[in-house]
Image 1 (cartoon, one colour):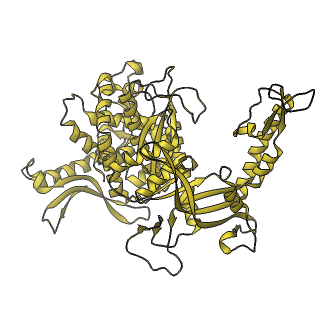
Image 2 (cartoon, one colour; image 1 turned 180 degrees about the vertical axis):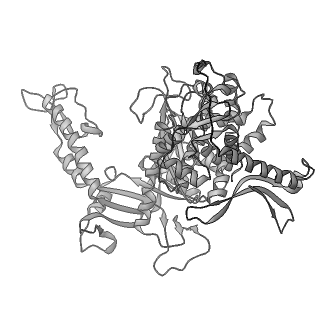
Length: 615
């Protein structure tokens, strides 16, 4: 290892770092940074001669490396006994993890430690709040558990663990107080480090349940995504086109999904700074108020629309596909390499009437100009037929039972039941008589016609035929369209909408790998702080996936990093027993070496120092 001096021609300052030579996979000589040191003028305040000092440090590091490469002999005392894991102090824990170094690289790259340490200066909190936050994030990523469980297992990391359980709980209040600043900071850093494109913003809502009996102001009984009767909270999440979380917020468990979007736009999204964007969401967000909210901000939207819930004129347009119709009325078919129909599509620009609620709570009708893209998919049609057949079979059983309890509604199997009051003696309708149930054949036929069709409504358009490009990337037109400075085809709109699958997968990661629920905290502040920790952890995990081009899933990354643990076999030596392709790929991407079977405490300290200083 050797000292490198890097002069800056513009500022005249000199940056010092310790580097080493190595050969890459092709055998070519390369250099890599082992330890960034800082600027020479700043180091002179601490060392009389920084250059001489760190040259000696580099020589010593080289000697340490050579000694580390020698055979390591361990002598074990046959009379020694193991202490119970739960009674050991954090520093005495023998089994420790180094996989978290990958998360530590990203944690410090995003300068989360810088923000927390800055905020901590203005508090009288005794413990290191950054150390507590890191422990909670790393533990949530690799060994998800309660706050108590995380504190009890804090000794598994090579980090400061001098804080009490009470300080862990009290720290949550501080973390929540800094939530808005932290979200803005993370968005800025991701944009700076990864060039985040915020034009396409995907939005969806999920919920998390609590193991409590009585609801409160935040935890309410609502429509659970997991069909549970426990109180829940709603979480709204925005994600960028790359699949990285942008921001989030929490809502009462009984909040309607579509009411969360305007609150998010006015709240956490607005706090990130002024921007123009295209909001992509599913049909649960297709309300007049949401459409109006997006358009008033001169933004775009791509939101699915229910064909079955549309009016007769719209259904007729969807089903119309005749050669004699104008070009815009006919479907354009897309076939696979064997000539089989994959899907077909058509679109039109048309006004649509929506209902908007004004500030006084009055509803009024208004007309918006819209682009409607209609798609027919063979796979979607097959799935719809299977789902409906199950509903018909269930309705048939209810009809055969001739049950007074058979329900008639617009949902599930009940929508295919006609329930008619009939006097069995006279055969006439009589509201006081028994009920006779029939299958609604007309409703079944009507639904069959619409199998495979779905619609995406948007105000996003591109350059028209022969239209010249304009200044900027996009603009909002006088007739309410969000125009991109390029041609935008139906396929482009579909590709925008299809990106929603990744946000659904993101929710699965929070619930499965990160085990964000059930939540055992009781106070509003602690609950909200818990989800802040989950969000930061989620961002780090998704960044790891993104950096490796989504080669490995979050579950595989979690499993491998958690398994990258070693046992202390001597006072200064750890033996590691797990290495796989995931660790190899992560190590190569981040400049970490997880392949070493043995590491001294000093070598581990160097690895963790590198993780904190890597950028």
